[in-house]
Figure 1 (spheres, helix red, strand yellow):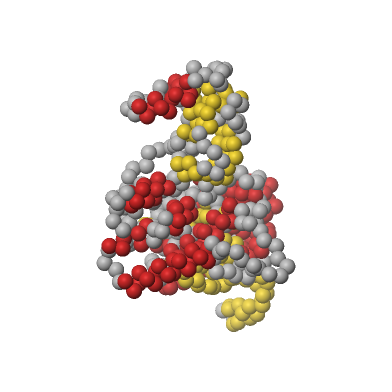
Figure 2 (cartoon, rainbow, N blue to C red; figure 1 turned 135 degrees about the horizontal axis):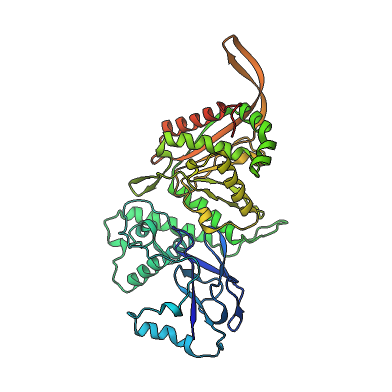
Length: 450
């Protein structure tokens, strides 16, 4: 009797666990190869997990809403039409515990397409800010672990991040007396008291007892994605000191060129051309001249990214926001950028984004002008250090400088704003980068081909 083990798939480099949303099958149900067995969710996207074996579900090891580390066996399928009542599958976990050195037979174990890779243990990084998943922060908050203490928790995740397993192990060791409380460190008692009062106030404000809202109100519970977005936004503000610079650009040449070529472009290339790929092409050129914008911060280290992966903020049908990523945008021409932009936007609108589609971004572009806004002050998409917002394109009378003198003309104008992490991006760099992006927009060649 062959048994196929379905494991929690690896959903991206930075994702170490996923939540079981819904089981489509139950014990005793038949399943075909590539048929969806369950739906899972990460802090990025929701995904379906297919079966790579045909047979009968004999075991489901996790319930809905359980958080499961990647690589963990979540279900077992009996192959070759064997009866589900066979006792073998239930005995398998116990046998594995008794003989940990024994490896499963290749012909008796089949994994789902995403093969998890063992992540090497990375020494903890102290003295700096690290990115923590909402799950880890919630566990730390419920166990009374401060951010200062959390910074010293060893992390085995990607780039030394603290996983659920790490924080639970730390809590267990602390309760067992293996770890001394951070109160034994040399700290000012007055600062301790202030911090404790602040933490207590935050906890009371987060979990109010009974609130009487009064008046005629409607109370709506946040959905899971809205809660994650809210958490990411707050975490970003707590992590990065935000500074926002503004400028404006005359995008008349860009507007006229797109209007001239959009029909022939779509007919020849089979995809529409929007302003987004035009903006991204210009941004990529400026990033190459200012690599510090394409970076992240790890404690007191600056990580400059050699790959230029541009995230584009996209609205979902639910009204929530997601940021799919165009990988290696500097390697794509305008046609490739257009296809990538349209493909990712279409997948987002139809809830078909893959987990890897939203990971690995190094710089983000958001178009607030889509909704009619002239400008905005965007929040940095961690762990990046900058995000650029483009506003609505409006016709305005402006002064045009010519060799024959100044004149007033009607031009297509647009405001640009960029928020950046002031820990490593100073005002001079941030403003210079933004100004150069605006100049790239303005000098778009109206006679170019694509």
